[in-house]
Image (cartoon, one colour):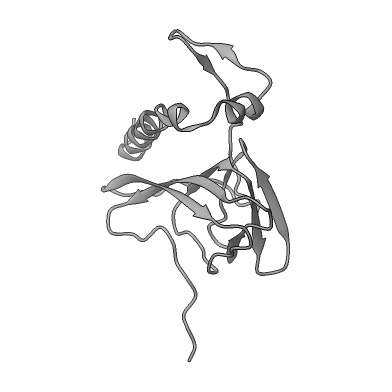
Length: 161
């Protein structure tokens, strides 16, 4: 097994370990709505499978970073009703899971995709985009970045003055 594959396996294991306590953060309706095909787990709950993701929201292939210093970073972000983030790209893979509300991803070319509570997706790495909350309730989502130490997970365009 190559070193890159070993790092990929270690990163995937760390991502899985980080995601396991996520069920404690989710309200019960989010679990129920995420998939109609839940199955019993070995513990005292259920496992709700989420879709396997191989392409980003912009159709780019999933590419893992090749680095000797891998790290998994994660944040829970909130956008208030009517809120809009700055324009951004991500130099590393970004997995997003909508915890509450409807998150609209707007691309610089005008395309928009809306993701609802319980949906997951990979965010675009090469196309400028921003998050919007066009709804009446706050949007909360988990963002997990498969990163390398010292690499920023979000890049914003330069400010022209």
